[in-house]
Amino acid sequence: MNSLVAVFGAPTPFTHALHELGHGMVSVLLGIPTHAHVNDFETMQNAWANAATAEGRNLFMVSEAPKAALSNLFIRARVKSIIAIEPFDALVAHLKSSQSLDFVSAVRRASLYGSLMHDLACSPSSLLITHQWLNRDLMRVISEMAEFLGLACTPDDSQAILTLLLGDAASVVSLRDYIIRKFPDSRAILVADRGLTSWEHRTLKATSHGYDTLQQGERIQQVEWNTAFFINHDQAHKSLAEPIDLIGPPRIVIFGPYLHLPEGEWEAEIDFKVTESYSKNELMIDALVFLDGNNLSNPRINFQLPESGRFKIHLKFQNTPVIASLQIRFHLTTGAIEGVFELSRVVVRRINVPPS
Amino acid sequence: MKLLPSRQRDNEKQQLLFSDTMPKAVTSTNSGAAELPTKALSVRNICKDYHTNIGLRRVLDDVSFSVAPGEKIGVLGRNGAGKSTLVKIIGGAELPTSGTIERGLFMSWPLALSGGFDGNMSGLANTKFIARIYDKPVDDMIAFVDDFAELGAQLKMPVKMYSSGMRMRLAFALTLAVDFECFLIDEVTAVGDARFNKKCHEALFERRAHCAMVIISHDIGTIKSYCNKALVMKNGRAKVIEDIDFAISIYQGL
Image (spheres, chains in turn green, red):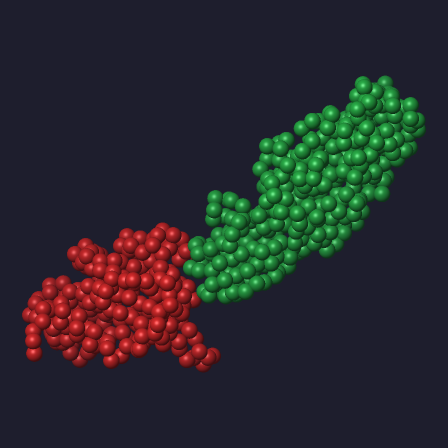
């Protein structure tokens, strides 16, 4: 085995562009590598074994959704890796348009990718490439990637890489130009409004802020889950848009948001408003970590709803693994003849960092 | 004294009976108590407080509903929700702490209630007494009770000698002997053995299907079979729900 070059990133044009640049770079500098798409440890082992017997003996690896064991391998072995981290809203916009997802589903998927990349993005052995790099000269991007990986790359090598990838590269001067030339549909996502509606921007703003710390290589510490990502059980599973009339049998009144967080201990701070709850309604709030039909964790709080007022409660939960979707569920545990419940705000905060 | 038609006399008498005991009306602010037909049982913003060893306890809290002629409302709620207190107040046995009741319908006492009997008097004497109170032809009422209660010669025995079943049959017959417009039914919809039970059901729900009823019952089948709407009670609060199945689903989760 000569070299292992790995590029991690959500499946977007931005990441694909980095795949191409990385692959071209390895091809020119080290020879044609074995290319592998890897998301788990076992596939990685196989790819490694295959590359060892191949002619070039170099492995170029891409991963869009690395599982914890694979990430941990790279982090603990301090394997230098290139990590593509995009702004959360750009990732949402891309997933929405390219995979025909509705907005909320795109947010859920984006939170999964963000959480899967979390530990690698925070690792000192990673080179984070973000949208800050979009306006950089492509030659510089290539040389910085090569330098980080410890590969000697002269200007002639960089030019050779560009020629390999583009043929005539005269009109391509920046990473942005390269992405747009290779993936014309990505143009809208690389501009400020991402092609999202103003409502989508407003809804996404606070949540994006939480996940975007990754762009600085910093851990996700706090994420606000907009209440629009929750679901009103009484209205045929529509997004939560207004206060809930509690009248009715015992039931789950609100659930969701099926977003993802990095592994660790978290605390949800839940703000809500109650009015007209005069007949001692009882609520149970639980956090459900759910994977493949199994409840992995289910801490809960039971309490009697006050008649009216604004309240805040805290619910701790353990999130593992990252691919488990998270729910905060609001159960009305007794039948209600009156009462209005309004979920005002949900913020999740990390309370303990898992040992690395 | 000018003679009035029987029904009009019944109504006037009942209003008179309650006029001394009813509290002053309070101003209604409840949106549920909108324009109602004048001929209706109308309960508005009823509150009932009891002084207990552990302080003031509110048993009914701003309860409002109405029952129009022929309408049947089921009252659902767990034990302690305030149902029986509500019956006592509607029946006039207790006064509300605040709120008003307009009995625009000729109201029964709670069906099969035997608490009003004088045990030393015979069933026959009790029947005569009720007939006079409600200004009914005595012979007609005796004939009805004798036929319905099937007590035979025992109707002439003191009520205190009756078994509980006999007592219930007499009470049931007496309630049906008066042409009430609205029956107040607290759990009891039938008494006696299976045959008498069937007779009670037919007399109440078939021959008096045109009458209004306030039916308090834990029996979902009864509520579902006979009621047009439900009053679901919880911790002294109450809500009228037009969809019976929805009301039952709430009740079952209380």
